Length: 98
Image (tube, rainbow, N blue to C red):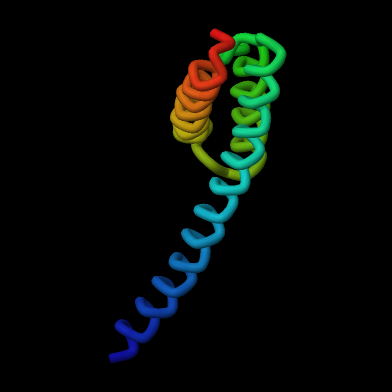
């Protein structure tokens, strides 16, 4: 019985963390949508390879400092960046700028 109580507590903690992650991702995508609108209205490319590289290096360093596998962290960020770029391309197409 004690094991299931502990397991449920762990799961509740994980659920709270998952909720926070989703909220943070939603906030991040709201800001990146603003960036996409700005890029489209100023005829800037959807992709900024220099910025991506800086971000990946920054995330690698932070993940190491936080005890998170940097390979996983960079794969996760890559997934987010790829989604952002797709959204920026859609915004550019909608605006007729690219």
